[in-house]
Amino acid sequence: MKPEPIRLAAAIAALAFCASAASAADPPGPVSTPVGVATTTLSGQPITLPQGPVTVTVTRTDLPAGGVLPIHKHPYPRYAYVISGRLKAVNLDTGLTSELKAGEFTVDPIDQWHKAWAMDGKPASLLVIDQTPPGQGNMVRKAP
Image 1 (cartoon, rainbow, N blue to C red):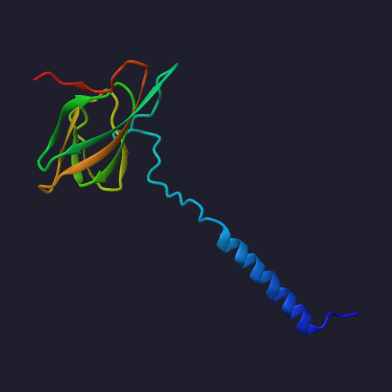
Image 2: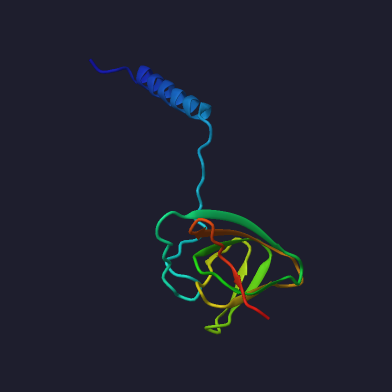
């Protein structure tokens, strides 16, 4: 016996309504948007992690308008995400100059002297993630 077209249409409509009602009751799911992927530092070095136990430190760094990150280097990987503003970074060992703006991600050079400053007469903010052996820092400032 063939189903009647009206009953079949009603059954399909009921199923569609139930499916949409169930979907409407579910909370919205997360949205993940990749910000960056890196296998090398800003100067092209391969990223390698310290061996053994590691401490992960997350820091927010705020530079005022005209603010400068003095000449320094990192013995371990440092990941930086620009929250706001624009920065110019200069690698003093390679001569490479880079500009970073809000929404961009980078990996600082390892054991290479560099400096950076806020651009355009505006402040800049960074979210920085360091991975170091326990009890060790990840910034060495150059003596004047």
